[in-house]
Length: 276
Image 1 (cartoon, helix red, strand yellow):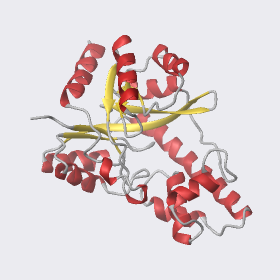
Image 2 (image 1 turned 180 degrees about the vertical axis):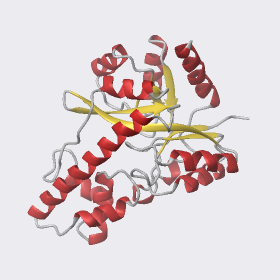
Image 3 (image 1 turned 45 degrees about the vertical axis):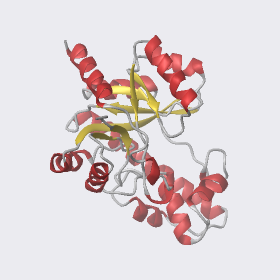
């Protein structure tokens, strides 16, 4: 029987809709053997998710997603098998979350200047326990009736290059790799999509451990392309649905985009070699 592992999922501790326990329950319904919760700049979901995993019989691999950039191009880095109790990791992530709040405040002020009545409290309420991001602003705008749907908020106001856009504070990919490695984990390029080959090569040279090969945005030819890079440079691969839930309308991706347990075992083998 085929094993199924989804290594890219978000909860309401970042910009997902569901709680950690709800995510694990849904994973069980989708007949997933394992998942990794990879919230943006937050590991606050991990302890609850791991305990829920024991209850539902779903392995939960501690993960995180960190924003980095190269030459103003935003690049997300996934970390797997991190230690949720690592103090330095939590220190860095707390800083990033604080910067997210400051960025949200700047975006709200720009929206106000554009004549759109929305407050930072509206956004914070949408974020609940999560690290605040643009998706929470989009949800708040929709609830206020300022846009007809989540995607209009990005396309018209807060997306890259739009009137209320504000850059996020990033670290370099090398810093993200070190943060993840020091917490006992492995780093992967998330949804490389249309990243030019020279940037992927730069990330490989900088010491990334792997590439997310399976992702909803990757058509079969892209999967083949990234898997070829993984094999050429002796990297690891990962894959998942990048599931958020709610207004993202991505429910059908959960259980559809996944990898298998052999990929997870390859990660464990690499970690053993790294510690030898």
